[in-house]
Length: 297
Length: 229
Image (cartoon, rainbow over all chains, first blue to last red; front, side, top):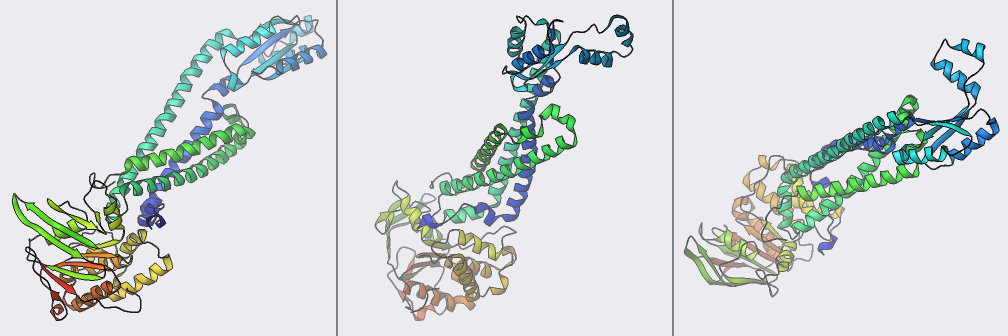
C-alpha cells in the first residue's frame, strides 16, 4: 500500500514558491556554467587560440613546380595533426611580404621576385602538442622539395608555457565554480529541509521512513537537475552560436559555428547534463538533515 | 488489534506506573481518562511506537513495536493518524497546507476524491471559511479541528487523539463523540486521551476497571451504511 504513495515531487508540492525561486537561481548558475563548459571544451583552454595563430612554414625549392607543390600540400593535409596546409606560390609569397613590409616593392623591380613558394601549415587545436609539431616537421624535413622548415621554436616554448598556465587557470576556475555551485545547492537544500521539517516529521509519523523521503527527494532533484541542465546547455550553445555569428573573431577562440553542434560537443553536453543531475541529487542527499537520528530508518 | 502488555514507566527515578495491560480491538473507541501529568501523552507515545516503555511491550496484530525489527512501527504509522494536544505551526502554514501535507501520504484515494473529501471534512469541523487561513492566526480549538480533518482525510485505521476533544471545546464535544463512534463502527481503532470524560459522553460511555492512574471508557460504535467520513 505504501508503494502507491508518490513522494517524487515532494518539495514542489509542499514548498512550491521556494522550490521555484531556488531552481531559478540554480538555472542561472547552470547557464553560466554551461557557457563556461562549452567555451572550455571548444577552446581547450588557450589551445585553439594559440593553434590558430601558429603556422609551420615549409619553404620550397625554386625547382618545385606549382602542381608538385599543390600535391605536396595535399599530402601534408592528410597528416592527422594538420588542420590545413596551403601552397602559396612565389607571387603570393611576394604579395604577403610587401603587405608585411610596405615600401620594399623596388627590390622586385631591380632583382625580380626573390621569394620562393611555400606551404603554410596550420595545426589542429586538439592535437596542438610539441610532439605533434615535431612529427610534422620531421615529416617535412626529409622531403627533397622542401628547402627549409620554419616552425618558430622560440615562440613555441613560450606558447606552450602560456597554454599550460591558461589551461590550468581556466580548468581550475571552472572546477572552483562547480564546487561553489554545489555548495550553494547544498545550502539551498538545507534551507528547504528546515522549512519543510514539520512536513517531514508529519510524514515520518505516518509511516514514511526518512530514507524513503531522502531518496525520493534526491531522485526528484536529479530529474530536475537533468532538465535544467538540458535547458541551460541548449541555451548556452545557441547563445555562443549567436555570439560567434555576430563577432566572427570569436571563432578564433571557440571555433566555427558548426563545431558547436558536432557529435563531440553533443556527447560532452550529455556528460554535463549527467553531472548536473548527480550534483543535484548529491546536494539533496547531503542537505538532508535527519529529523531523528535514532528510532527510524 | 493493539495490545499493551505489562507496561511500566520510570520517571525521575520513580515508577510512574507499572504492569498496565490494555487491549484495543478493531472497531473500538476508547477514551483514556486521567489527571494532569499522569502520563496520558506518554502512554499514547508508547502505543504509537514513539517511546519505548521501561517495561513491557506493545503488540500490533501480534507484532512487537519494540523488537529490533522496526517495520511494525512503520506499518502502524502508515495506517494511523495522530492529533496532538498542542499543534505547533510555523507562521506561514495554512489550513490548506495541512491538506497538501496529508494528501502526500494519502493512500488509495485519487486527488479529486481527496479534494472533495477535504471540503466535507472542513465543513464537518466548522472550518470551511478558514481553509486559506494561517494556522498561527487560528484558536487552539480551530487548530485541533484542522489537524483532525487532515488526519481523517487519509481514513486512518487507527486514530490517536491527545486531549483533542478538550481542546476542540464544548460546542464540538457532541460531534466528536459521534465521530469517534462512527469511526469505530467502520472497524477502526480510536484511542483518545482526555483529562476527564467529555461532557455528555457519560450517557453512552461504559467505564472499565481502572488501570493505574487511568480510567478507561469504551464508546459504543455506531454502524452506518454510508461512508465512514
